[in-house]
Length: 64
Image 1 (cartoon, helix red, strand yellow):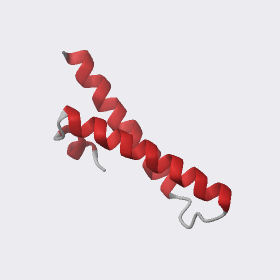
Image 2 (cartoon, one colour):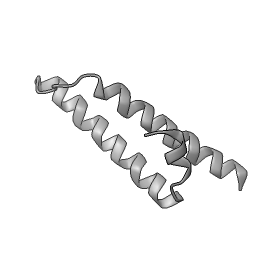
Image 3 (cartoon, helix red, strand yellow):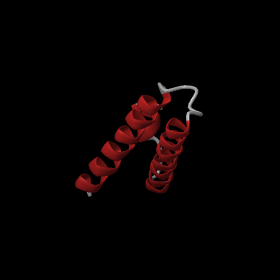
C-alpha cells in the first residue's frame, strides 16, 4: 500500500486496516512457527504497511 493511498483513507478505515495488518502479522508468525509459511517476504511488506498506517494516524492526531 502506498502512502498516497493511505492519505485518502478516513480515520475509521485507517484503524481497520491497521488492525488487519496486526492480525496478518500474527497469522504469519504462527505459520512460520508451524513451518507452513510459504512467502517469508510478506512479513516485511505487512510490517511496512502497518508502519505507514501508524504514521498517518499519528500525523492526523497531531494536526488536530
